[in-house]
Every structure is written in structure tokens, then in C-alpha cells.
Length: 243
Image (spheres, rainbow, N blue to C red):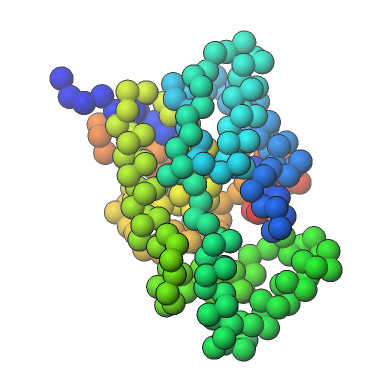
């Protein structure tokens, strides 16, 4: 008899997060998105034999809202496991380590960065829901290892997420829910196609809607993509957000 593996893995992105100065929490809209997801899963009769959440607050809050809705509906889902390998990379740490080094040599970046900080101080709410030129440049420099950085590298990030998926897929549960973030889900999808290319991964992550689900089937031991970035539960355009 072969090793038992999961048949289906749901990769669920957290709901809309907070503002840049307090990002790791769900916004009220993010809580609503998570509840919409829970109601959809219950209507569709979709349940899970294993529940996993990353180590971040926004991931665990999303899982708890969905889990609580299942309990209120009379179901007895397994307890949520926390696996920090499903956490997003630490953008604050990347910024703190790399942004000053870029700013010291690139006046255009320094201008973009200072403008972003000024918008935050001025209470410009839109800056919290945008991916700015400064964000793009900092993350690209981190991925390309252009500057010394003491935190997690891009390669180590890829390795931990891919190992987390292998461990989840090789467990005894038939259907697994993993509450994670945009980039870990994109890394997993890219790995289905044998890719570790940053361009592929970051473009998929950039397309990810809050509280979306992606399904990876692993029947027969070989993972295959069933759907990506699905949001049938977010029928109101107001609920479809990216950040």
C-alpha cells in the first residue's frame, strides 16, 4: 500500500489587511470577506479534514472566522494548526534592511520613498491599498540580492513554502485548508509547473484578490492546478480588493 496523500489542498488568502502602520490584522472589510468565504463553503458543502494557518495574525484571523462559522453551522471542524512556514515574507524587515541602502545611491527611489511616507503622515488612505514604485524596487532588490541583508533570503523563502506544501500534501487528510498570503500561494502554484521564477511568482501574487481560494489537486501523488484566485463568494464589487 502506498503512502496516503491529500487529494485536494485549498490555498486561501487572508482577507483585506490593515494599514501600512498596522498591517498584520484584518480590516472590517477583511472580516466581511472571510465571513462571505465561510458562507460559500458551507453552501457548497465543502469541508476540510485539516485546517492550517500561517504564523501571521491576519492569516489566523481569517481562519478563525471561517472556522467559527463552521462551528456555528453545527459542524465540528478539526482545530486550526499554526505553521509559520505559510507566513508571507516580512516586507517591513525587507524595507528596514534594504530601503536605506537603495536611497543612499538612488535619488529617484529616495523621492518615491519620501513621497510614500509623506502620504502616510498626511492620512492619505489610498496609499495603504496601493503597491508603490518604492515597494516594487525594494522587493526586487531583495529578490536579486543586490544589497547585504540579514533577514530571510528569497531562496530561503521559496524553500520553506515548498517544503510546507509537500508536508501538507503528504499528510493523511484528504482535503486541507491552508490560510496563507498571496506570495506563498503563488510559490505553490508556480511549483506545480516546475517554476521558481520570481517574475511568474510575483505576477501571480499581484493578481491575488483578498480572501480568494486556489485549489491544487494531488491525486496520484502529482500536484495539478484545479483553479486559481477564485472569488465566487465575493459577488459585490465592493468586496473585491487586492490589498
